[in-house]
Length: 224
Image (cartoon, rainbow, N blue to C red; front, side, top):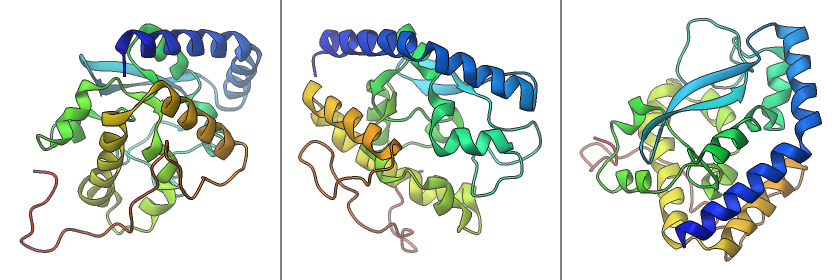
């Protein structure tokens, strides 16, 4: 996709989103502050096209020891946070990241540097694409927390099984993305967030390609 056109779409979409959602953003900030105290925003280093950047979210967890990923009923998630996460409202401040040029509206979700350090050469190709708020992998694995909750070791299962599958879906889309396919992904994301089911098939939003299974003993693992 033409980089200038994609950046223009990002600037237009992020600016419009921040202006139109300003009352919602302010209201959510007040709710978090009153119910859970400060800070209202959560900041975390993520990998992007030019190294790492500071991703911003509405805070949905309380401080405490735990894994770098959340699975199921993580006790660190606040009551307000569960509601924010259910509707993905905690992600809205990332429109600021889009405006800054650190993220795009549509692109592979930005990962923690500790996971990126283990990418294979092919998977590192994703670092050429600006990370996004949503993409087909985000739609396919929108119930990620439930999948992780069923794993005996959520971090290991995420790193060795789920993450490679997400990266495969993201890379397949990024290689052939167009402005029209990005609009289709945004429309599908809005539809899912409003309670609709993800389309079973779409020429613009590739479906999840099958069940996830662990690599067999001795087989070439996608992560080194």
